[in-house]
Image 1 (cartoon, protein in one colour):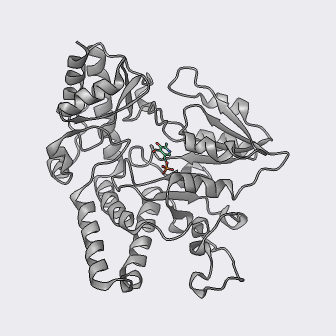
Image 2: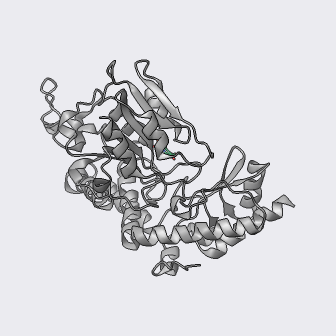
Image 3: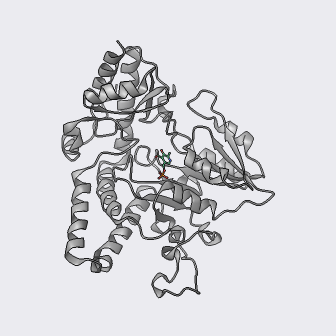
Length: 382
Ligand SMILES: Cc1ncc(COP(=O)(O)O)c(C=O)c1O
């Protein structure tokens, strides 16, 4: 098995203090906090003490743009196509309020494996018909199922880059193509994709993509990122808005509202500044290690986990093709909550979902940590 080394793994592990205290294998819920992110946060707090509101103009507006630029570079788009929002749910609702359904085009196609907040955006709109594709294997959805369900009545193909429960990686270019051939938009919830799978949004052709710093980008809670393909931006007029979306934000003119020409027209108010700072710290580390190395490392740790868990007689819900897997692995268990508590007593942090223990290693984890998880879980079963 390829060892998929990460350059300077020891230094990287030193930058994440939780790794010295715990066996941390839950990055799909919350990426580990780095000393880099902590230092960025400390700098933010110090400026707040030192300068108060004057830090806005001299520093903090610049940090917001620094983050926007980094995220844009990271996901292969321009800063003008990148918006900062408070959560994925808000980003999705702004899109839903930018692209209204019409009687002839009122269907949104998603899957039963998507994160619920995606479907909820249209489930609450009586004028929209939500089509939820089934997963035949409980792990994946075949692109042909999308192709069969999408037609001239479809407004959006709205689905995930990586399914949050099974780790299955969808083919974004294929989904964009299916949507566009029917005149529909391709909207991707990339929360479980960005930071574990390399993304180059321009080349995929998708129209909208959402992600955030919380999980695989190790940047903490409080922000989401939204990509909107540049050709679409001038056509869309969100029906929920804010002063950050206004062309003349600082004119404070109530009666003369016009949208900004770039993706900031989708923004919903002041971004969470503490998270702007922690997200910058996390993003710097991710960029330095590089997505190719992270993907290779995570694939290696996932393959190892699958092999060791299989040898230990544990039942896994992962796709058989390793290239379609990601580092979210579900282990079937009769008592997932009990197993997670047992693992926690041994200093191993993982999570559970109905019927499963969920483990999600990231580039900073070691082979020994993955092996330890399998051993301790097996011990609980006896
Ligand atoms: C795929 C996916 N989408 C969305 C969310 C949550 O989005 P929000 O930022 O609205 O809480 C999560 C996880 O928490 C997720 O895994």
